Length: 84
Length: 245
Length: 234
Image (cartoon, rainbow over all chains, first blue to last red; front, side, top):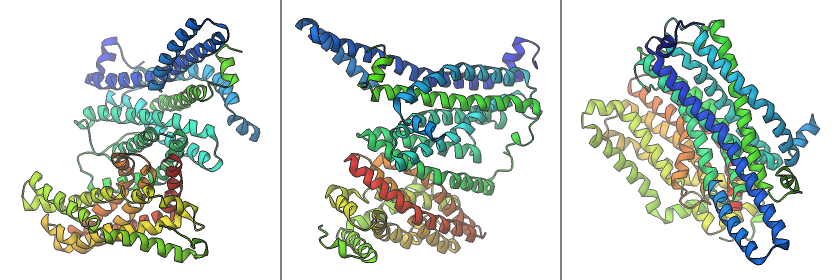
């Protein structure tokens, strides 16, 4: 360990602001890189499940339930398409 | 070996395979990243000339190294897609472009932040930074071209051609910027650093480079998985994965 | 234009015909020939207006100014290279021709270059006087632009082929092509800088010539592939 105290770590002989700023920006960007595809995958999984449910339901559902779920699906789909 | 490569081209197989890889690569990469950052930030001694500001090297250099390698990976995927018309290569190329762009952006931003205490200014037209900026433009060009095409299959092919042209150009760009810089080099600004690096500083750097490579592979795979699921949302293997059938 | 007997043409004859066809199209619309020169002229006048009229400073910046403006002029016209062929369907016929698309496209690019880049490098010494480029650098400026503009046109043609099927592809063309133009700009402007300060510009001109040879060999392949992709998209 090179530094004696936490304040020394934060200060780094006057360079602390630069070093920590660089690491913070990198951290944010890397987290975003990791987070965005997993969010996308999760969202698409939900969509696929909902779509499969809708298909299963449409074979033996009442007409109004069908139109309802269809409306829900179409908004889902519009969202999916605008985001990717 | 060949059967492995053939399998890579099959979406369901790749999806399962990449799922397993991501599962262990994700924690390993994050662990290496944190160990490397901890080592570089807190344990390694300061540079005798630049003091503590040099610690930015542990993210700047890995980001720069991997973003350059990433361009070649992207172009290789593009070549595979053009020659053998493998759909998976299209998806890999499309997945790699934004990751490379972000890594190049990280290298540029950290370079600028590093420049402030070292050179007293945020931006210097140093040879390395200039080449990095042009690499950033090359990535942005590929991303912009992909977005502009309506037909996404044609978009992938167009990006493949563009990234191959870029690949031929990159060594020329690096070399020309180098010569240009050495001709105009201002005497007061001279970059010193990695040429004679001590082992105590080198090990965390190698760790961080490894972590960044891992991260690149990881994010490309994750992007590909999200893309694959969407492309094959009608297939039974995707429905099975989602918990149906 | 119909190509009824294209099967019987040899490669050289097909190349020549394509070259003539594009050249004639250029000559028949003089505005396409004059406008890039006008653009070059006008943008160069902007620099003394923006930077101030100090002749010493201007002559110091002259190589860079001239080269950057030449690059911009080349970018401006690159977008039009395959546009009319794409719109009137002759590009599809070109793709179906028995001769390799890369060679036929090269003929068009060369004709285009003669009408734009070549012309621009011919008149560039005139405009160089406006920004006070030292007289001994004029031949090098001409040579560097002659070689460089061919390079810029070839690379620009790749961009044009990639973006021809995209509506409003003009800005996109600049975005994808400018980073590829960097080495040409560096070699070209450095050659002129060297000549202006009585240095040795020959090595830089040689590098430019090497770039020309390389892009002559490789760019047509990329152009051909890109044109086929653009047809798939449109």
